[in-house]
Amino acid sequence: MMVQRGMEIAENRPFSNAKLGVLILLGAETMLFAGLIGAFLVYRMGNVTWPPLSHADIQLPRLVTGINTGLLIISGFTMFQALRTIQLDKVKYLRYYLLFTGALGLLFLVIQGSEWIQLIGKGLTLQSGVYGATFYVLIGCHAVHVLGAVVWLAIVICMSWAGRFSSVNHTGVETCTIYWIYVVALWPILYFLVYFA
Image (tube, rainbow, N blue to C red; front, side):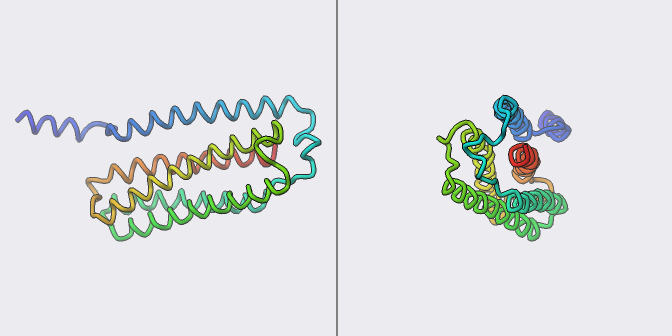
């Protein structure tokens, strides 16, 4: 009787411990990025010309990054579809959506890395003043989070192939989806702020 009552209470909880943990993590991440964005805005508003004259000839790759932004947004959609398919107990489709999402996340990182290589070749480095430092710290911090999301997704993919998820047991997919969509939603803000400011 007590066990049955405990199970009913657990089923009626609005959040699992895992979801609550991810939401707390996202609260901390939001504070981190709010601080980084605030620092960027202080430096940006404190300079009459942006980029500074020393970097005026360096153009950020807006078009390529815009396309890359589209890829990341599509990955948010495919991740959401992965969650929907497991809620409907379609495990086979879950795996396809997860793999496609992971491929898009990796492609985003590869394109961003190639952009950085070109920018470094043109003289925009972390040590090249406030402009370079704020660019790489802000954009790099997001890239680290995308990499973390890809690693997390890889673990979820392995768990899906091991048959660990079903329509009643998919907390791992759900928490990964929450984090992935957060990282995806954050990127357009950073893109427009840094590339068009």
